[in-house]
Image (cartoon, rainbow, N blue to C red; front, top):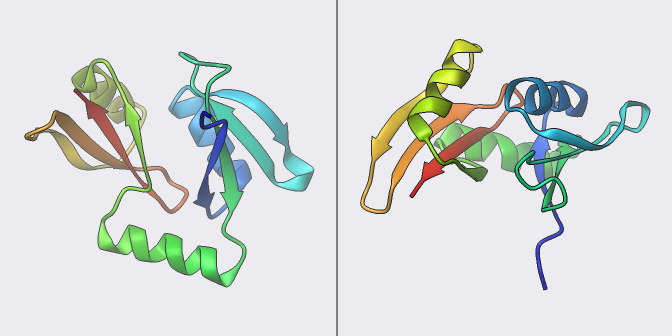
Length: 125
């Protein structure tokens, strides 16, 4: 058994699709804008786990997403090989970081806003 698809709630799937592809560099696996449906994947594993950019257009999803954001909790973790380079690349593209690369007991982490209502953690072993 493997993870084929997972989702993250976003406040606007079409804007999220643009951010995740044009800024973060993910590839489009499925994009049907008229249905507000967007699935992206890592260019490093195009056939790997897909990420559904799911609309938060119901009260439970919106409350959940806003609570995580307001509490400062990332909704997903993206692994990177060189966190400092990725931090610099994304910063140059205007990405807002809440936490610069910081060494922890288990690796190095950084946290940024995805412009769609979420905090995302970058992680390097």
